[in-house]
Image (cartoon, rainbow, N blue to C red):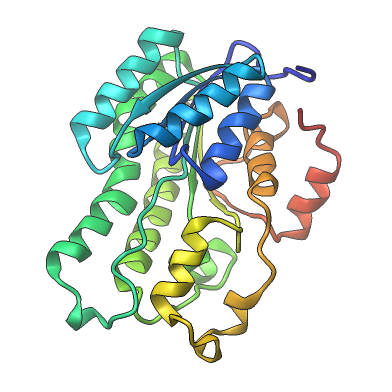
Length: 272
């Protein structure tokens, strides 16, 4: 494999069984990183790890529910035992349900489950992994999120309000705020934390989101959700770029796929 500029580095990718997570795990491995691939479905992450191994990379599959603190801690400990360190924590994991119903018709249990994964999950991951990075005096936390959880002008981007997706929207907004605060707390440690908004990406989650909100009635779908979907390889390339020396100065930022400045930088980035 060529252009292995991440040789000797170690990454954790959650939500790594499919979509952006799987594409990112493979791209990091091509760049030379050793990768822990984590998700709830063991068969999916084993397939990703097998593909990485077939291509000459090094990867470890660890079934993990990021809403469960014990599972998250065990996954981080297995990573350190296997590879000796953690340089990149990339969280692509999320759940979408409940969708398609107003907040007062959603069960508290379903609403809380989304909060546990999409909001508490990023905290649990950081709580387990960041101490290793702080001791190393280097590391990067990247939380893949969405403008559905935008918080307005404080991020230089407009929030996107999506009715009938209250749990997902609230969790994304909270996670965005958490990463911003975490980045401030990490100043001076050598560790950075950023949010990544990949836009509309052709994944199973996108189809689930559209179906959950609009069903088969596309007339109810706003133009935002009818945009052509990006291949997961594009956002994966952006995430690898965010692990490169070129972006070591970035922290507390929302990095958006459709930002012309980001696209300009990616045009000069030689991904493996």
